[in-house]
Image 1 (tube, rainbow, N blue to C red):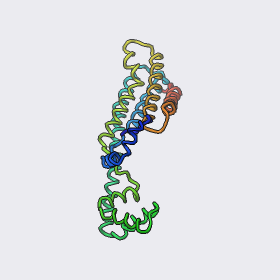
Image 2: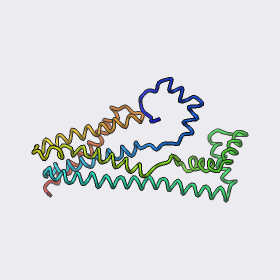
Image 3: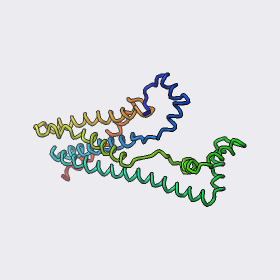
Image 4: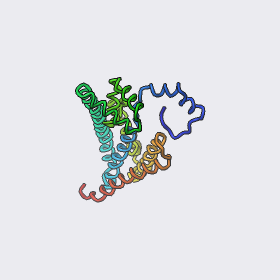
Length: 255
């Protein structure tokens, strides 16, 4: 079930926490959460594309330059971010795989030492005496459970399966879709001869809406109000855009 800020009906809540409901949820495969990948791509796409728009406007270059540079940025930088996210997610998986092999080697080579590690881990959690020994016996009696426990407790890894391909696709899709927002007025209205100043004003308004919308959407999955999340994203993204505009204005003589 995807976490949101919407209140859960009492009947549904009790059903989810019944013995059968709990067993079903615990036994189900963990699903990868792509919220980070979406926000990462969407914000960066919107910021970098609007930075180009603001920088070019500040340098007093033509709207045609904005379209060319903006489209090149959306596709090239979006692909670059997708590749980076793919490699980063894959590297996380490789770290877990390496640690798993190390734990397998340790269990085969020094099993008593690994048993003692399990004992110390659960002793720190408050287990003691016969209950502690029973917990140790159960965990070390199942090799996969033993290794998974060590990966979580000793190494601090999450064992939720992650798909590098899906993470990369979500990042790319978010970057391109939201990154096109600042360019939309120029792409749609520049061929019609609309004044560049009006196009820039339209870009500012649409970008602000996009920043706020991404933050508000994020709030549905985190413990934060939509107004606070949207405003925070708007202010941070707007700050980055303002820097780009100021730099473009200061360097306009170079162009």
